[in-house]
Image (cartoon, rainbow, N blue to C red):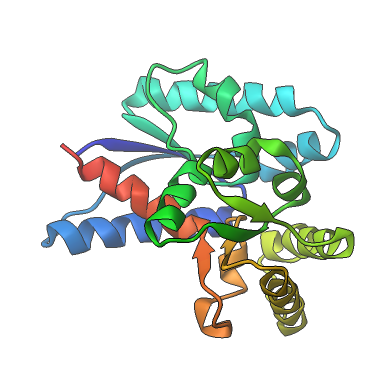
Amino acid sequence: MKTIGLIGGMSWESTASYYQIINEVIKKELGGLHSAKILLYSVDFAEIEHYQATGEWEKSAQVLGEVAANLEKAGADFIVICTNTMHKVAPQIQERLSIPILHIAQATADVLLEQGIRKVGLLGTKYTMTQDFYKEKLLESGLEVLIPDDSGIETVNHIIYDELCLGTIREESKQAYLNIIEQLRSAGAQAVILGCTEIGLLVKQTDTDIPLFDTTLIHAEKAAELAMDE
């Protein structure tokens, strides 16, 4: 079994989901007492979020790049960045490595295409929704991407940082997300990507009949599969 190098802590709530999902997949596939070989480095999210807010992406790339390099030295066979937004600096992190990074947007695009989805709504942080680093992976795969209007972007972003990353789950916020999801459906979306690793803590498939693609679940399951791949 390959050793997975997890870069977590962004936020720790969603990182806990990664650990659980990966081990559940390993147990289901291999049975018995099998569990995943994981190296986890959990960063201080306050530091990373500060660099996001101030636009100092190169500083965050330096921090996460050093973390990834240390995970490789410790024996990781590939890297999983347990957050959508920080894939913005995945190319800079990859430059410091000789092992691959399992990209969350590419893993998601592959699953969407397998299920015949061609036009998809995207929810995430304002960086994920408005900047190209994430959407370009989806577009390169042949997907058409829709995002909320300006008001929707602010609502989704506010709930992520001021509630979900702090472990706060509010029914009013769930309804706000469902309203935005419905707007994306009305605009032609066949499905919606939950493109922030915290959103799945708030919105579940049972809350709506439009297909939801939780990137935390997709990314973690793909990591487990890759770890078992001979």
